[in-house]
Length: 294
Image (cartoon, rainbow, N blue to C red; front, side, top):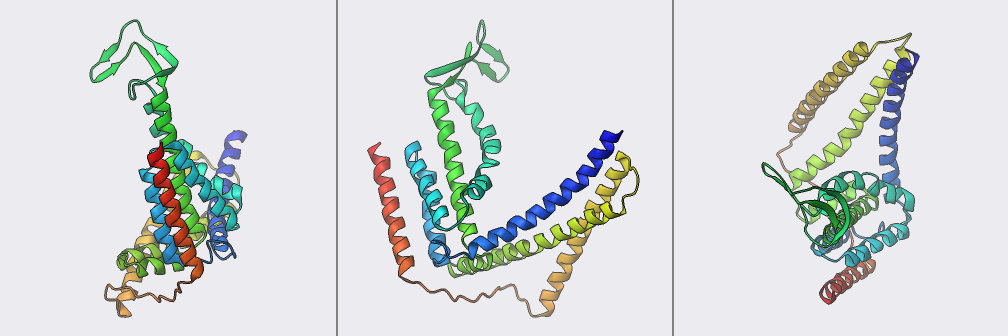
């Protein structure tokens, strides 16, 4: 019984710690975007275009070594932008093996990717045919399947690293203004901006609810009471978010909102931006040459 009570107490503590950590990580991300690093001083418009080119090069590359070179460049840029290396690596690779590994794992076996066998996992007396499932007599890990999985995981990790690096080195408001300057749909930009703004509001509301629950918890509470309270609070939070969205929309209409968002474009294109774009073009050209040589 004591163990169950301890678990319920830890549930509230862990939830509070998780909500606080989410806010803390967001604040730290904004702090990194204001540091005097290499990428922080570049024009956000040029960064978006060049990072898009690097993402396309990563997606089109079929060589493991070429993708590794792009990833190495990403790590070097992160260090030159004064982003802590372990913070950057954990932000990318903490969940990638869990999700992309689950997708790529079946592809390493010979019944998905035939090829040169490396390790035999299981053998049968005869091939297995069970409805639409057809398994060979020996299930093995193939060299072609393993290489394909490695390329897939590294490609996803590199793409996510580039995206995270762009966000960490660019303030959110400047990123939205740069997207508007590049003629990205302004309604979508407005949705992104409001979502980013109000998600922190609701995280703060949820944190206050759990803190109030913790401060009023006296004695033992059973699992049923915990479940009822949690379901009620989730419903309350959903109802509050719906009402707030309607109120914000009506407030926007009352202030002259006509469906068009306006942004102040005060960016200046300087020589470091030209040097960065020239370097990216040369780097992508080198990637194309490496791809054709192998």
